[in-house]
Image 1: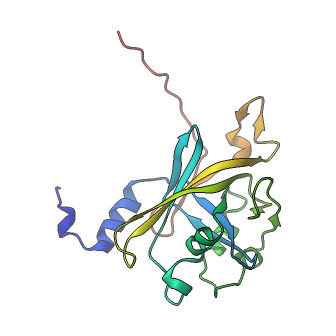
Image 2: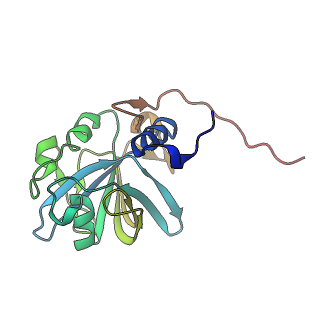
Length: 206
């Protein structure tokens, strides 16, 4: 089956992308507004952008109805206070992460709603999620807007300034997946465990 994207409704484009590019890691992003009120929200259009300098990227979609300035709280907060924490979720924190996706009134913290604890970061003001097994403290590098403000997305790039790892995850210079127990995002309401692994050695050129 061959299709031209110009012929597809926007909803179909989203469903094809989210249903095939998977499993996706989840950026559980914590920010603060000018009043110091923390915000927390998950984003699955997320990945590593660069290792030197250590940089992460995630995509913030179109605005929620009724939000100030027509922007999601996460994006508005980062534009006002150019820093954020990318917390990573696992099997133990999955339910709380899902709760934090609820669209709450502006100024109401998702930390309390999701039942998680804001913990001080090492290098920035925005708090990390104490229960998250991994957290990357980032300062804003740049925001790239793709498409229109009403239907497009803003790609947020952040340079990592500090890292938190649960002690049992990072040992001997290696990340231990059996202790991390990460999850991945699928389409719709679906998520995936990362439990069964296999390895393939890179084959050298003849």
